[in-house]
Each structure stands twice: as C-alpha cells, then as structure tokens.
Length: 507
Image (cartoon, rainbow, N blue to C red):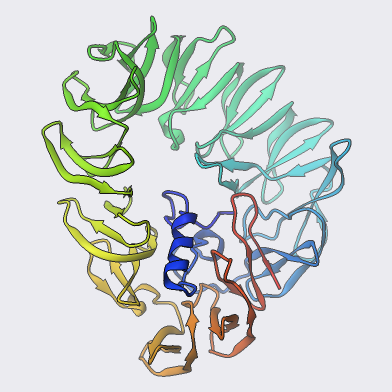
C-alpha cells in the first residue's frame, strides 16, 4: 500500500511547511493530499473495479471499497494491511499477547472468508525507504510453514519454498528481499527468484534501483559487490564500500583511504581523497566529498576541484550545478568561481523527475526555478505531481496548474477524467462540468478537487462534508479537520490518518 507524498517519488511531505501555510492563511488550504498509488491507477483514469482501503471505527479496523461500502466490518484491534489495493487480500493480526510477544495472523478475501489456510503465519512484506516510510510488496506475501518462511504470490502460488529462518525486504532498494538461513544472509527478488544464496554476514543495496547491484559483507568484514544476476563485480577485500555507483564506478575504502575503482577493481581515482572523511554522492563523474573538518565540496573523477570544501552541505541539482548550504542558508553554485544563486533561501529542494528547484525564504511562499536558474513561478506550492506532470500552486489566493515547462493548464487539462471541477465565484466554491456549466452552486467556504473515485470534500462554516460524482451532498458538513494534513473522502468515510505506518478511513 503506497503512502501519500507531497512529491510522489521524491522527498517526504514537509509537515512544518504545511502547518505554517495553514496558520498564515487562517483557513485550511485546499490541500489535495496525493495518495497516488492508493487512490489511483497511476494513469489518471476513472476507476471502475473495486479497490480496497483500511477502515477504522470504534477503535477497530476493517476494510471498505472505493464505493465506500463496508467489506470487512471493523472488528480487529490491529491494523489490517492490504498489500495490493486492487486485490482482495486482507492481512489481519489477532489474539495479540503483548506480554509474551505472541500473535496470530490470517488472510481474508472480500467475502470475509479465510484464505491460504495451509500456512501457520501470513504477513505482508514491509518495504522501508530512506525516510522509513512503509510500503508493501504488492505481489508477494510472507508465509510460514513448519516454522520456516517462504513466499506466495497474490494468487496463492508458492514462489519461494518455506525453508528459511526469516525473510524481510532490503531497506531502500526495490525488488530485493533478504533471506536468512543458518545464520547467513542471501537475497531473492519479488518473484521468489534466488539472486544470492545465503552466504554473507550482511547485504546492502547500491541504490534504490536493484539493477545497480549489491554490497556483500563476509564474516570477517570484507566488502565486495555483486550485480543483480549474482555475478561478482568486486572481490570481498575492501574495508568499506559506499552505497554509491555510477557507470561501473564504485567508492571503496582500502588501507583507510577512499578510492574510486572500476568494475574489475582497477583503480580509477585516489588523488584528492586522502584527507576525505566521507563521500556523499557521485553523479556525472563528479563526487561530493566531506573533509575531516566536516566541510563539504566537489571534485571530478580526475581529482580536479569543482567546489572548494567550505560548505556545510552540497547536493546535486541540475546538470553541472549544486545546491550549497552555508550557515543554514541555501543557494546554487556551478563551480568554485561561480555562484549562480546566492545562499539566501531557508529551504531548497531539487525535484529530479520534474527537473525544477523549489526554494523558499520564509518556509511558506516558494520560488520555482528552471535549469537556467530563472524564477518561473512564485506562490504557495501545494502539489508537485511527477506522475501526471503538473504543479499546483496558490497565487493571488487562487489555485493554478502548470506543467513542468511552466505553461499554465486548466483543471480540465489536468483532471481529464473528472466529472466535476472546482470553481470559485464571490469567495464561494462550487463545481462545474467540463463545459463550465454549474453543477453545484457556489455555496462552500472551501473545497477540494474531485478525487479519483468521484468524491470531493466541501467545507461550510468551518465544517467538512462530501459530495459524490454527481454533485450530491452525501455527507453534510460536520467534521472539523483543522488539525488534519490531508482531507479526502471515500463515500461517507474520511481520511483519518496519514503517517509512515498506517493510513485509514474513518467516520
């Protein structure tokens, strides 16, 4: 189950900024929280099949579908995990004994019938990203038989035999599941294919993409590298290897010094790295380094200095440019002799999938910069959607949409599958159809765009309710969401939790 993110596929939601925006505006900002994979098919198309969500009522968990219909009545004390919300497999935990740390698990389908009963235990495989946000393997489930663990797919077919002491995902690396056997660690992919037999003390990813390969660590703490086909890339002979690689170049530590080596172990660069405490990144052949005084700079793969090691932090931005931090302020540099944006911003983030920089001086209003370092937009950014390719920004107290070329787009362009579109007249909100005909009168003080299931949230006198895809009010305004960071409805159920561990709908 994917988690909502302000930058889908990018940095985690900036909670402090959202709260600052709420205070500054003295109203709830019309904030469409992007639970993209949770409430969309990834293509912006109107849903017709059933999709499933965890529900919560009277301190019990259940399941609803995208019509707001109750599928499993709220009757479980523990959170119900839905690994793939397109499939009716609901993983339940029950009979929990916190004193002895014991519990039971089972899987239910949409008929409330227990499935996969041949297994003693059945659990989701939790994936953790760099920010410890949880998602779940969508097509693989952890099962236990005769005290040993394996995997089944969502059809119930065994894809990894139950012969391992444990299994769990490799943090921040996709399609990678660690297996334990007799005290040794190996690795399989999400189809159950064994990539690395259990033989190592530890395995780490070289990046978020499994295709980059893996760092292997032996019992005597020697580091090496294998690729995603288990071909040996670097022998296990190094003191350390960073989770960084580019074009067959690896960052290794040998004889207490960092070096760059090629795939066959041939030395690529050691010059300029002797006094380096850490290597923080590598991109386009350039390396971000931290010296023993905790100052950060950049050198090339030939050892040439690009940025002097005088900054508190440096991050890659547009090709050939870097976000620099000095005394808590951010700017942009191209070289040691060329600062293109002075460090005056309190926050700055490069969104690589959109190829834009968002920078703010007050934590509320942002400037959006292009690769020529020009400020193209200014306003309160409420969404940057890299799947659909648009920016949603509040300017002059109005929500506007732009593509990543900073060309203004209409709501109809962005949300082409919607039946209703939010509109504003005389400081009141209503809804029009795709031709601009009024469907819902201008009567609300605040409102959201229609979500992928046809529902929209509406506010009157400080209270929130919901309308359906026909514009009919199905929940009279009654909820106070002043402390909520996300506002969304599925039928009569509203979003009740947004965190890295559990998202549910309640009423």
